[in-house]
Length: 266
Ligand SMILES: [Zn+2]
Image (cartoon, rainbow, N blue to C red; front, side):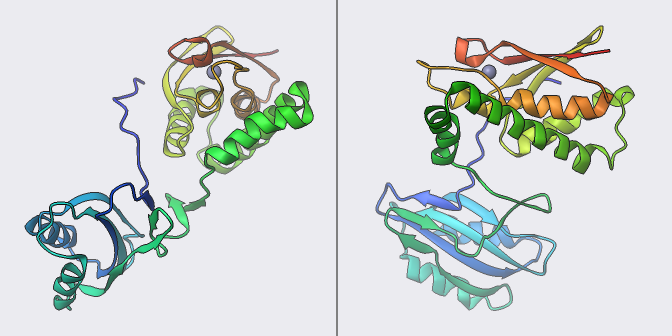
């Protein structure tokens, strides 16, 4: 399993309005083939560059499409664009400007956020820095790392119950489990599995861009504890045995990956 080139996913439900001429639109449309073409053509014909485009659940007949456009070189105003869309009553039910507040443009309709059919919550930098830095400051280094580990451990166990058990994953299906870990970790923005191998009773996994380590201060790194916990929770459930996990390479120490050695104990 080799990770491909990395193109960060920008959700764009909230856009920092650095430029003056950026406008967001909420388009409530009928779910018909070519609807994105129709929208894209209107933007193209007016020389408006699309900066973000997102949509709601496409299994429904009516879909909300949220588009943010740069009007710097536009030959029409946002209001003219809205009027043009609304003339096409067959496809467009409602078109309005997206909400602007302080420096932000955001979609009030695209809520909650779903990955596959599950609701997810995005934990941003303030939350993560609070967990990684203030927890250590407030509770002490050892206690904070132990909490991170146990938080991860509980999540690993619950993740196994929720995703691996229905797939009937067993130690013989390690490749399938690793594919599941890659799919879940990548789609939730946690890390990418670069490669893994089995050596005797050890599984060695290389993760790229593991969030826990990428958020750490270069001056004060402490490595992965949440991740170790997640892997412990998953692999203990898979083998029904105790495991011992070491992080032997880490991006906080200048390595290109975080490498975990998972030893399955007797
Ligand atoms: Zn690391």
